[in-house]
Image 1 (tube, rainbow, N blue to C red):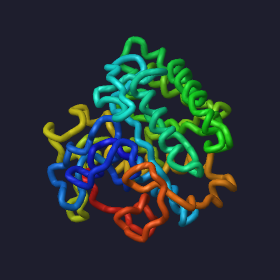
Image 2: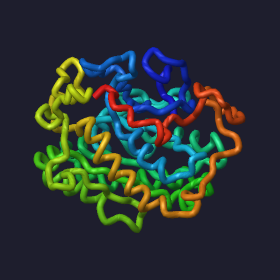
Image 3: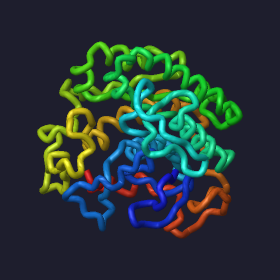
Image 4: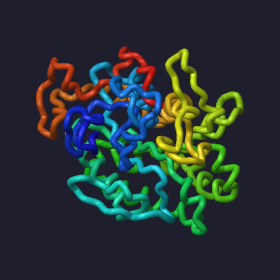
Length: 333
């Protein structure tokens, strides 16, 4: 779902909450589309930063009917916390402002999450809320009040479920409380630097399956090695393969000077979507409704909320993530 004024930088115009084709740089609260890799070819769409949203969806597509699609509703804000950060502002016409960095019941980021979730479900009565992918907690660790994060998260979770009960029939399992929250881990830097805080915050995501909260570990890969971050030695260039990692970025175009605080784009294409999608499939995918689901007879046009019949024009397809489309090797790392 759209947030920015154009689908891609300088591309086709769109409006807030329009349905648009997804790519590697989703329309999150903070616009990451201008942080271009120095070796990116902007003419090929290699702009901005790589997130995991697209790649989670691509892992799920082979498991659903060919005539069904996945609607991603990006509401992320990097560097956000429950215990510190600017609250920002909220508007029903544009969502949360880019400087919004505080989660909690009633906060602009929460209002943004609720508004966009409801908008996605209202676009078609056959749209279903399958899962919420949640990766948050780092910036709470550096706050003296870090221990407040778990209860504040739980309060927000309960309020979210209460606020969308009107859409129970469009939720996985037939009720909002059954929609799983898939809570992803962070990089090894945070655990090594804030051990006690990490155990308090990320530990609180664990062992909550009865509440439909599921923790997904990312600290290490299947071989026990640290999952790669933006540290130059961990995400080197592979120029012969057309891949340019974080080693090529500079202070003019990196997300943070503390490179180990963020996962590499390689990890966001690989281990993170692999594990997040697997968790979604294990928790919400083994149901008849998911496996045998069908696309709506009508679907919203990308330019607005008005339903329209299917179009043969590829320029107005709502989904461009078919498994046969290839993996789009270069995306601006």
